[in-house]
Structure formats: C-alpha cells, structure tokens
Image 1 (cartoon, rainbow, N blue to C red):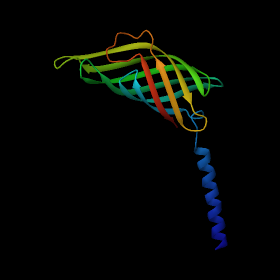
Image 2 (image 1 turned 90 degrees about the vertical axis):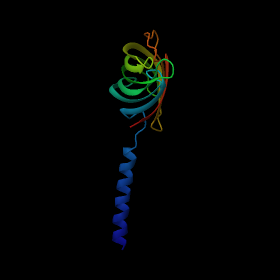
Image 3 (image 1 turned 180 degrees about the horizontal axis):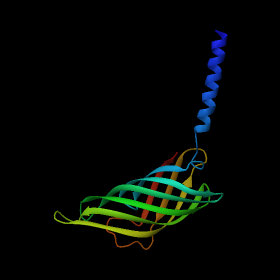
Image 4 (image 1 turned 90 degrees about the horizontal axis):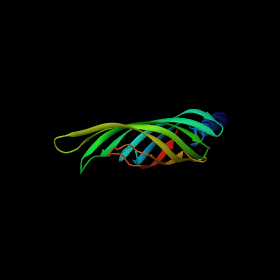
Length: 159
C-alpha cells in the first residue's frame, strides 16, 4: 500500500509540475483571441499572432470577422486584417496598418460593399500574471467607410 501511495504521489507531483509549466501569462504567449467593440466592425472577433519578438519590440498580425452596422438599421459582415509593430512589453505602443472588407445592405434593394486600408495607433496591455490582454486603438485618417468606427476597444485572452 505504501508503494502505491508513493507512486501516486510521484505521478501527482509530475503532472502538477507540468501543469504549472503549461500555464502561460500574456507576456509569454504568442497567440490571443480578442473581442472588439467598434473599430474594424461594430462587433468583431480576432485572432492575433505574434510574428516577431525581441526584448522591447514585437510585430504581430491579426485577422478577424465581425458584424457591421450599415445605413439605417441594416447589419452586414466584415473581414479585417492588420499588421503592427509594438514598442514595450506589458504596456506597449502599437503602430501599424490594417484593412477591412465589408458587405452591408444600403437599403432593401442595394448592397454596399467595399474595402479600405488605414493606419493604426494604439495602446496594448498584456498581463504579467494572467492571460488577460486589453487593447484600445484609433484609426486616424480613416477612409470614407460608413460601416467602421475611428476607435476600437478590445478584450482578449492569450494562449
């Protein structure tokens, strides 16, 4: 019985140590999923991947899908993408560019669709103790897209 308890304790310690090493915080993670309000769409979900990382600098890419509000009460869909350079670790300045393709109903008879490229300036927070990430950005000199917003707020989880 002692031998079985000893083996069980060894296995438990082993898996506990592995579980601890599997837990990553947002600073160590290369991937994140975001839920964004406004910005590229009225409501959108994004996958973010860190493409390059150095001490106080990293480059990431993002792709997402979402819903946009067209003219009046119509709802449409959008696909967005971006690439940005980030300066800092936990608190970083984000500079990059992105694009959004959208398709929405202009009225009952017409569909409005388009694509626009725009610069991105923002602030990104990555937690050192959890997987939480936060991002707020603005899209200055926004092209004349009736379905996008000049500011975006995103909450995410890193993995």
